[in-house]
Structure formats: C-alpha cells, structure tokens
Length: 315
Image (tube, rainbow, N blue to C red; front, side, top):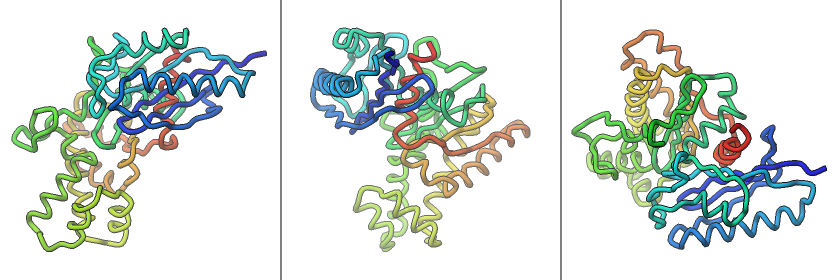
C-alpha cells in the first residue's frame, strides 16, 4: 500500500530546501540546492522536478499528495511570488507553474508564514493559539497566529514586522522608509551597527575585523562569551531595538510567545535578554510581562519545509 507524502519547498535567496514529509511531520528525505535566482524560475522548477522523479524512482512505496511552497513575497491568495528580494523573477505565478509541471495540488505562502505553520503543526507552538514567529536572517520576517489562525490580512501580506518603524527619523531601510525594525535587528542591521560603532571607535581591531569580513555570527557569539565589551555592546544595542519592535507588536496582538527562528536567532539569550527587558519597559500592560521569548526547537532549515508541507496536510 502506498504512503502519501507532501513535498515541502522553502525558497531562499541563496539556497532552496526541499523535503518529503508525512502527515505526522516525519521528514523522509530532505536536501538543498542552489536557488540560482539570476536564472529564470523555470530553471529551479526543472531541477526540483528532477529531484522529485529521482526520489520516487527510489521510493516506490510513496505517492505525492501535493506540494507546499514557502517563498519570500509569496502570496497565499494569488499563488504569486511578487518581486522577491535577491531574486530576478519579477512577478510569477509559481503555483500554476508547479501544477502544470507536476499535475498535483500546490499551495503557496511566504517564508515567514511557512516557519510559523511549521511551529504550529510540529514545533513549540502546537498548543498555542496566539504567537508570533520572528525570522532573524539577512532581514527580519514574521508569521502571526491569532486565535488559532494564521493572519494573512485582506491581500495576503499581513505580518511585515520587519517594516514597522521604531524611529521615524532613524536608519534608511531598503524599503525606502526610515527606522524599520529590520534595519536594526537583522544581519543587515547588525552590519550597519558595527559600521556606526567603528565610526566612533576607529582603532577598534575587533570592529575592523567584523567590518572587513562578512558578519560571522559564531565569531560574535564567541567574543560575547569571552566578555568582549564591543561584542556585548553590539548585541545589547540590537536586543534593545528588537525589544522596542516586539513591544509594539505585543501591545497590538498580546501573543503568548515570540518564537525566534533563522541564522541570527542562534545568538539566543545574548540578544534575547536585552530584547526581553526592552520589550517589558515599553509594554502598556503589565500582564504582557508573561510573554515568552524563546528560540525555535525545530532544526535550522526544517521549519520552512515542515510549514510548507502543512499547507497541504492541514487544508
């Protein structure tokens, strides 16, 4: 008897992760391939199609029940990826393209929503109805669950937490606005912080090293743990700004928890301790002090594909 699996796909600016997932969240197989975002989307679809055929040729006991996709600027309502950053695709109807290629049901959401779905279906938020997943990477994204339902808004683009302003006269964001949370609390934001710190302390060799190379989270973590004052200041400042943004969202939504996922979330309490204090200092309701700030328990790279697969399994 054949067993059904869903293909979960998490499209990133650099790499795309895919996995074949059962209804109970077991990942039968997963891997990643380069996204090659400078090439047409047809190139990625063709390569994923080849991987699908290869999997089922070796695993004939399984059948494909559908495809779930998480992608930057993915719109659940329209099936369109709309001008995703770091990818040269413009606006594409990726759902129709996959349906035409694979002849099976295909659903889409954005990457942060996929991570939130992964947490709700298979992670720390299984028993939560109100929570926010915050993805900390090159940028800052969020997926919001309210009263047990993923919040999409009327046009599918709710949850742009990275672009709420914490300072209307602050840093210029890539989106064109000023003071966006993403421009402080993300890999991009930390890079700007390091440069600004270096302007004030030009002889600081640690800052010079961080500016010269791509930001190395492990190096920053290690320096923090060894008591490096500069590393501590960088993370404290970043956490304070993150906390201001969390307070704005908490005052509006009153979630049970903020769950952090993505590369820079690995900093853990190095950032979250100051974020927690800053959030609590800016809350209007004392009961909000019970809001939990926790790291995702799902392995890096898996929340997105689990959440994408749950689009099919939970529909």
